[in-house]
Image 1 (cartoon, rainbow, N blue to C red):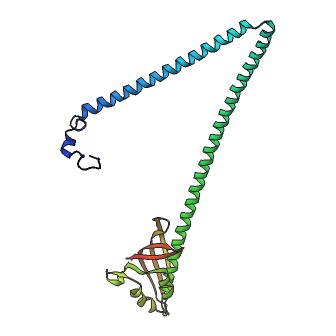
Image 2: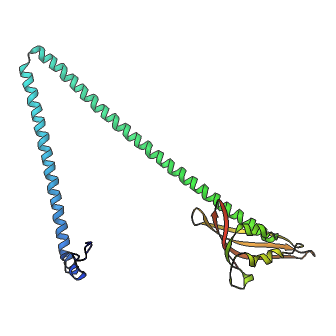
Image 3: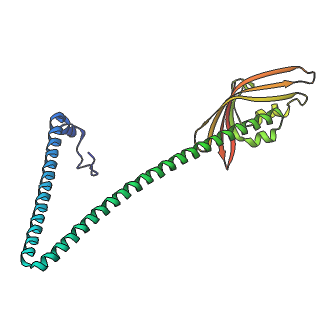
Length: 256
């Protein structure tokens, strides 16, 4: 059914009649079992062939050694003994060297794994520190935005918001507002004789990536008018910030 040429491609009805489909409980298991048996046979054959080759090489080496001993005299036998000792010592040195190399490899591997673990830990700590830094930036820019609203600073407010920022605000009677012109009227007409103080309580910042963050918090606003009357208002707010050109910009907020 995966054939590129449509004329050679089998139909769905033909595919359903294939033994792999209509008799899958019998055909598939048998074929898989046969493939496994074939692989085991090949493995055993290679193992036996390897053993036969090693046996032949060992027998040939022993036979050659005996022939050389029979042909040499006593002096040659001493030399042969010395050479054999040297050969054995060389083999022992080779074994020791192999053992040292393996030990060095194991130690190197352990050092590499330790280095990778330290690198991963360092990367994780660095990532956590970067995330904490971005959360602190989002909280700080939110406080600056709220101060601009309370102080009637529309210029700062507009610079921190996207031109097409969307919002749901009780002042809009439940309607979604797009842009900053609706809020401009309230910010420009903020009473100058009223002193206000805004506090963010329990801010929670969720990072949705490298350049997007959502902050949820409770906003408590204290105010004192010219006659000394005090008032405290509370609202629950959610703001979405997006980082553009290394600067956080508000793209949406919801206030209740």
